[in-house]
Image (cartoon, rainbow, N blue to C red; front, side, top):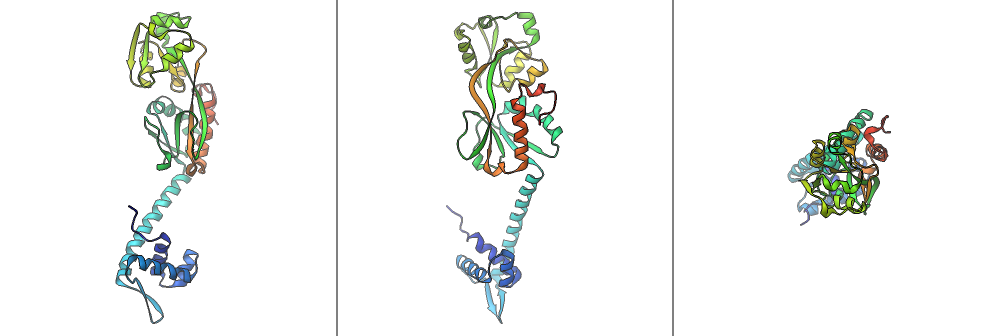
Length: 306
């Protein structure tokens, strides 16, 4: 059911006229004619169902009902103006919000933001994590990561990262249990299965001509961060999925077993609705993040990403 309120133009006209007590002054404030103010106020009174202003001795006088309503409307309009100023200042001072997967925030975005903060200390970033895709049209989120194929709709989208996967383990595990020279060798080792990406081992095995059914031992976890942590603790071999594995590879806590990663055919996109893309701070962050994502590994970059 729709709200039972008059048109906003009529509300503004009545509030301005009640405050000024003069048609011309109210019209000058709103940038319309005195006759337009008079027309809007009559329309407003029709919606309210009572007289709000009366003409006496060639002067406009406000009725008791009009005075009460004008006070209430003034408070409401003051609150609306304050909210608009708050949003405007947030844009100008560089506050942006980003939606992304929890594991992506933990393993990639949060560590990467340290470098961004050094270069752009005036821009504050709020991360909003969720396991599912968010409808940006019904939120005030500025940017979002989306996974899969290029998003459709009235959004600005930037292809950030082509997803690759490759088996990874700790240096200690490889030194103790290696060498591993070919894909079929993995069948003799404990493999770490991530329930949030159930097909990743199948995809890798098929592209490397190995039968997944011959795996002898599995360790199952439910998140990407848990899978990589288990590998770091020498518990087996995990799938290193870019960009989640970038930091661990850069720090040396995990190493790739084979040189050539496997493309999955999926891409991570940075998406912005039109309402936020016009903000300079959003474009600054997007440009910076795009450059970082295009690096082979942003945590290995010798110089800050511009």
